[in-house]
Image (cartoon, rainbow, N blue to C red; front, side, top):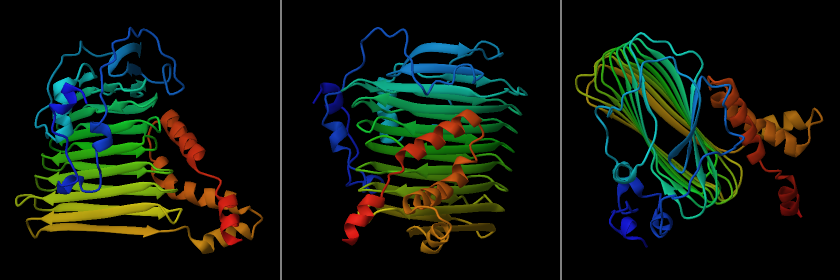
Length: 385
C-alpha cells in the first residue's frame, strides 16, 4: 500500500455509519495520481453544444471547456459550513482540481451547466472538489456526470450554498466503470426562502458510497431530495442522507428508490433532524425497493429525529418484488414475460427519471437503465425445470 494511503485512516464497518460498507478493497490499492499529459478526450457522455457550459475533467484535471457562461469572472471561494465526513477530509488532502462556480445575485442562467468527470486507467485516483455559490434570487441548473474505463477511484466533494430566494436544480449521475470505486460527498446549505432540488442517480461502479447532507438554515427554505440506485451483478451502492431542519417553516420531501438484481447490495440510510427552534417543519421521507432476484439484498433505515412538537413529519420504507397481477395483466395482452418484467421495472424507476429537468440527461439515464435491465427469462425457465 502506498504511503499516501496508509497515512489516511479509512472508515471501517466498526463505525455505525459504515457498518454495511467495507472499504478494505479500496484501501488495499496502491493508488497514484495521473501524471499523463491529457489534452483531448472523447466520450459519448459529453453534452457539449447542448449545455450552456461544459467542463470536462479527466482523473480530476480540467481538460476541456465548451460553451460560455455570461457571468463576471469566477472567483475561487470556499463554501461556508462544510460537513467534514472522513472521505471529504481525504479529498481536501489530495484534491488537484474541480469546478468553482459563482452565480451572482438576481442572475438566471439559461440552460444548464454540465460537469463531466472521466476516470481513466487502472490504479489511478482523483479527488475533485466543486464549490457552487448561488447568490440571492439567482437560478441555475447543474449536472455532474461520472463515467470512465478501468479500475480507478473517484472521491469527489461538492459544496453548494444557496442564497436567499435562490433556486437550484442539481443532479449527480454515476455511470462509472463496473470495476471502479466511487465515494462522493455532497453538502448543501440553504438560506431563507431558497428552493433546492437535488437528485442522485447511481447506476455504475463496483462500490459506490453517496453521502448527502442538506442544512435548511433559513426560514421558509424548501428541499426536494431524490435518489435512484440500481445495483446488479456484484455491485454495492450505499446511500447516506441527512436533512437538517435548523430553521422554522421549512419543507423537505425525500424519495429514494432501489432496483436490485443479481447479487447486488443496496443501502438507504436516511436521517431527518428537526431542531428545537424549527417550528412548523413539514418533512416526508420515503424509500421504496424492488428486488428482482433471490440473492439481491437491500438495507433500509429511515430515521426521524424530532426535537419539537410543532411539526408534520412522516417516513416509510418498503421492500418487495414485481407485482404478479401487473405482470399477468401484461402477459394476457400478448407481451412476453421478459419484456413485461422490463416494462414494470422501467415504470418503477421512471417516477424519478422523468423528474430530471435536463432532457439530454434524462435521455442518457433512460438509456443506461435500459442497458442494465437483464433478460432474466432464460434463468427463470431453467429454475422451473
